[in-house]
Image (cartoon, rainbow, N blue to C red):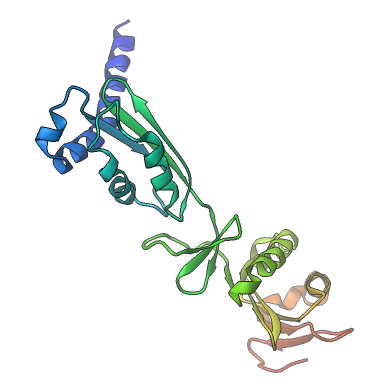
Amino acid sequence: MGLRRLLVVLIATALVVAVSYGGLWLWRQVPVNELSRVDALQQVRVKGPFQAVSQRQVEEILLPFLRRGFLTVDIRGMQEALLRHPWITEASVSRRWPRGVEVAVSEASPLAVWGDDKLLVASGALLPRPEGLETGQLPELAGDEEMVERILLQYQALAGLLTTRDMEVRRLTFDDLAGWHLELVSGVELYLGHDELLERVNRFLTLSRGVLAPHLEKVARVDTRYSNALAVQWRDLEKTQ
């Protein structure tokens, strides 16, 4: 029983710590006379992954609403305001008796880097790149923004085909003149032309498991735009065979 009571005390203490930041933040931002009402808000808990959206950004969105009392705070307005942030996909706001509000947000999932200042998310939308968000493991996609849906579909098809570590997609771009250009995690570049991408990549994969297998570390570029052949440029020899 002694151990159980100790655990209960520790859990209760942890809960107090979890809500204290919201309470302190609210008291510092709102004039004391506005908090003197019987139904004044005293605790605000904000939960979320806080990767693309910071906790401070969420608090700034909520602040205009928190000058209302517990009973009169605009729950729907808070939720709608949060959902106007481009990176917030879901938001729930609820009262917590006796004088608290609990907020939880979900963020869009970044799928790829797009150019210097945008990220492509799973929904297919291009969103502004949040400052400080780590994107080192994400592939890079590029092309005309009007083609974002097509480029995403091609990336998803290639990602399903290229599943081993060195063969994963690092960068996929499309240019009207040159067509598709693919760079693998291993550093190998493939020129794929304008059509039959999966067939051309499959042709390269077949050779990479066969005659090219002992020499893959030396391969710099592969041009697959020939009907029945591949042109290989070596890293060290710098010549095409």
